[in-house]
Amino acid sequence: MEALTRLTAEEWVVIGPDGKLTTRTVFLEAVTAGVLLHSNMDIDEALVRVYTDTGVVVTRVETAGSYRGQPFSTRERSIDLFVRKHGQWKCVLTQLTTIAEK
Image (cartoon, rainbow, N blue to C red):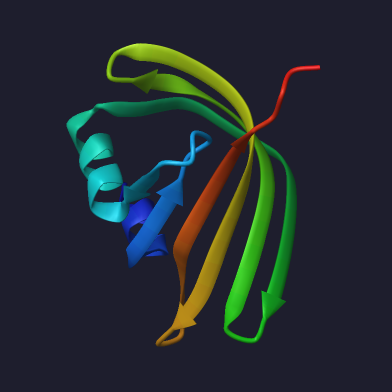
């Protein structure tokens, strides 16, 4: 939780696979309350690009856990947009896309 708070900007939003937006406040509240729990998060592929004060991170990740008591397991691509603010990198946007099964 500490790392997530430190690495995300106040204006951070997550665009889920369903296209819905989740604000940083709502996301952090869900984690703090135990509504969203991750038991596994394995990144097996990552691409990082830096353009002066902007960075893009593209990953392939397998996650597992529960949301509102319902278990989940997904394979997805994540695109994270970072900006350098006052010498620190902060994530301002995350886009999640489910990888279709073969």
